[in-house]
Image (cartoon, rainbow, N blue to C red; front, side):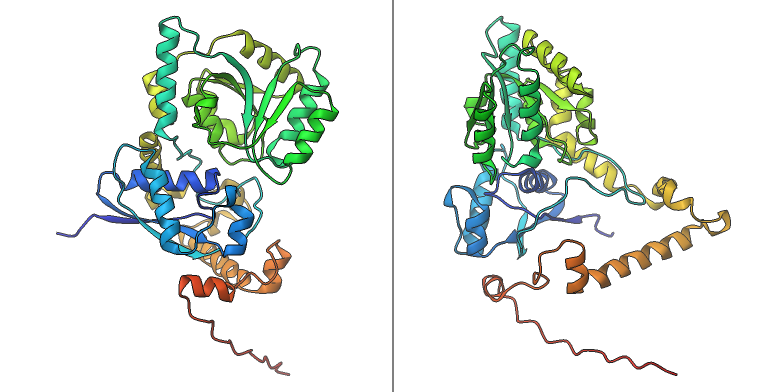
Length: 388
């Protein structure tokens, strides 16, 4: 009898202690995929040189060894779940890069939100539900936003909206929480516009400080799926966000208020401040959990070829005559595309042309030493002869 045990390797481009969805979501995914013990799971995260750690990680947290970093990651996740996760952690040499805020539309791609939230947020939501049911004051604070404090995360759009409609919003007070390279500019802009906005350093969204806020305003349109919006919904809050593909999953929840333009932003904000959040149902709580996210992931990942073939992107097929639209030709074209991508991405000049940081194709000597990697062998240059 052949074994049906499967091995999942989860690669991500960020790691704790950097508090971003790119580091947190893959970690929870690894833990929940490994929860029942039926799968072998490995989480592969970047190892940064000490110099880069100091630039990226908050509160001056740095690690002298892979073992020390791994220990930090494991302690963090074990403090937030009620089971002992059994998965491996591997490191690869990592450069600090800046990513775009959108994902490509690829052939055979399936859109599915496969993220969940930390169980602690759902516990807060259950507590708030109980308070609402017993007539207690569940939410005693107004509106807030939490996110990395860089302009691209929607801070400029939010400040502009609050400034433009300050009178109609009745002096709405908003607390902003975040750390980032634009923190000083955001604070100065809020003061210059004379807004009722307080700017605070970044904190863990699970901090009790956030439990009593009623309204979470998320102006960002640069996320793939905004983790903090999901967390706010799980805590029973009203979430105000733009009509954007990154927020599509959240539209199913009654407490998600979508706006399409400035006027709608003002209206949904006034309504949210005047209303109480709708109680979360058991099914809604489940849909936000990592158990549900893992189920969605398994269903999406296990689509076989015969099912996936009709999903081939229509735009990519439209360029070919009917007699060329065969599975064999499609596969050959995709294989050629992959080969071309791999070949070009291995050239320094091509990588730089597409936005990569110069001289980051290979890890530097310090990263090689930290990870125990051998020095690269020098490749011989190929001389091409022109035949005439």
